[in-house]
Each structure stands twice: as structure tokens, then as C-alpha cells.
Image (cartoon, rainbow, N blue to C red; front, side, top):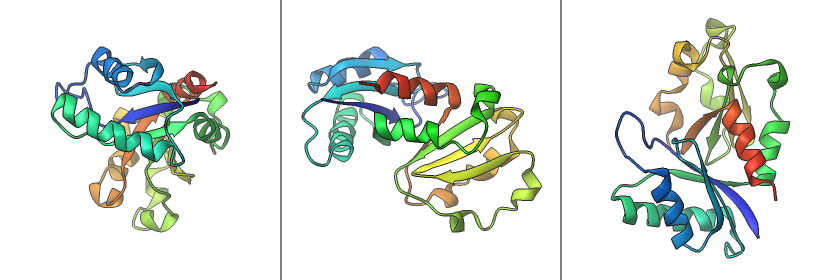
Length: 184
């Protein structure tokens, strides 16, 4: 059995694309997944399966993509990650997470690896003390005054930066909680 976290992008925001967590749990159970749990209302689900096959997370993502659209009537971008990956994201954090509040540190999970060239047009010095660093299929964002006041977060939210990439962000509290929830 492998335990995964499914990260649904852009649901339950401003009353749009509603996916009640009880309905999401039921959908996952109907698909045969076990130990199904959700975290918060922002599209975080944890479950176990032995049926993912050789493609693991990619196979689960494909199944979930179809099932969510069938059940809720709209498409949702979904990233599925296992505990090993989620643990590595926490361990590889380039910022002093233990000294920061959860609202000051965010991770954007990415469907593909990106390199620094993608951000060549951003004048990083203009945003200091806010910073970001690229990781393994992830972008770490340090925003000392929180995301709501972040000019860097606004600059990084430009769709042109993410062409061809599924990207969904979580604050550090959620990042660490999902890692804990997927621990076998």
C-alpha cells in the first residue's frame, strides 16, 4: 500500500468550483481507496492504495482527474504526491522553517521540474526581503508579511510564468501536516 496526498488546485475559492470535502472523501472511497482523510477545505486529501501500478502517482492522478470531472461537472488540476516526496520537500526547504510562522513560508507544488531560466525576467532584488527558491518540482516562497501583502507572490502568479505547468500552493503548516498524514 502507498499513501498519497492529492492536491486539488483552485477549489472552494470565493464560492466557485465547490467540492465539499465529505463528497471528495466519498468519491475517493468509491474509487476503492482506503484510509481516506481530507485536510481543511482547500482540496487536500490523503488516501492509501495498492492498485496504483507501475506509474504510481501518475496513474492515480489520471483516475482522479476523470472521476472529479464526472462527479462535480468541472475539471480540476490535481497533483498526487507520496510521502517520500512530501518529506523531501520539507527536508530540502532552503529557508529556516523552524524559525518562521506558517503564513511566512509557502510551497508551490509543480507538475514538472522548472529551472531558474523561467524566472529570468523577475528582478529578485526589487522584492527583498521576500524571496523564492526553486526545488524539486516545487517552488519555495518566503514572504515575511504573509501572502496577502506579498508583491513577489503577485509577480509569481502571472500565468505566463506557468505555461504548461500545473501549480498549486500550500502554506508551511499544510505542507508539514500533509507530510505527517501520509506517513505509513
